[in-house]
Length: 360
Image 1 (cartoon, rainbow, N blue to C red):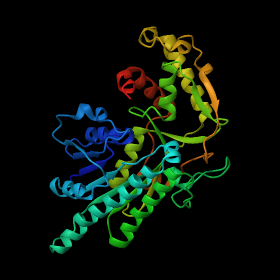
Image 2 (image 1 turned 90 degrees about the vertical axis):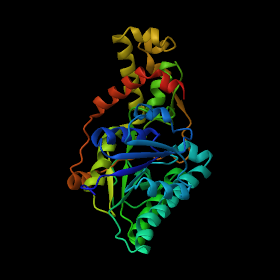
Image 3 (image 1 turned 120 degrees about the horizontal axis):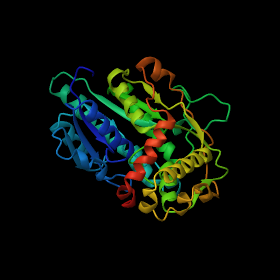
Image 4 (image 1 turned 45 degrees about the vertical axis):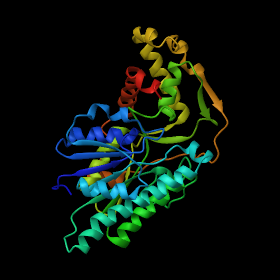
């Protein structure tokens, strides 16, 4: 699709990763058109896209991916040739206490998108005797579909067998299989990427890194599940967007690509690092004490004292790690941000955007 002007439908584009992708794409390809479809549930925030209002190549549509008629209308009216599918319920804790929404959005929603794409991109042209044009359905998935790793096991590759352990990861695994099936059965031009834990601007405050930052600023406990030795591979969100860009422009149709940061950290070590960075910010910038008077321990450079160990969650996977060798060798993918540079950018963004996270 490299030579074709892209007209993208980005589902879940008002969420954390989706919004960062939309900003990245319009900055990188200002002549492409981006239509965002988002239901604006708890994690979707139209403010994440506020600076794009007035851009003639951007449009926001408030709607649900389960609405197949709406999807078909958008694909036809805006002549969409690329779907980048971020929309998903994604918080493991929520999937344990209320899995119904995860089944509805992640499985039924993806199925509705696939049916709409097949109808508009394949069925209608064939019925009318027209050529089927180049198109792409890119599905954004997660490393959690692969299950869990022991400390010394090799990282997940694209050939790792699926073994999801939570309602969230099981729903994402199901959606991955549907995307694959629509390619192999109907010829829909698809790609899938499985990414590691993202972090960066616009991250909803219930997730680990923004939760730690915002809790420190409010002098609230920093909850650590179990012993805190769960290991995750962390990826700066804009590096994820770069990876998807490469998959869309250079990836082989029908293939899966792992996008990771090669950057494994235990949860407790992440929390302690963020505490140190926050203490350093307050020590070097005296205006922060006036801006955040409730951050009492951070003002005294004692943020780590907020760490509180809590009961581990049910079925908590011990370790995730992504092997991105295929994406690197085939597409030339490599993260631009180191964890050191990315985490500092993230901390600074939350310190500078109190109104954004306070409103949530």
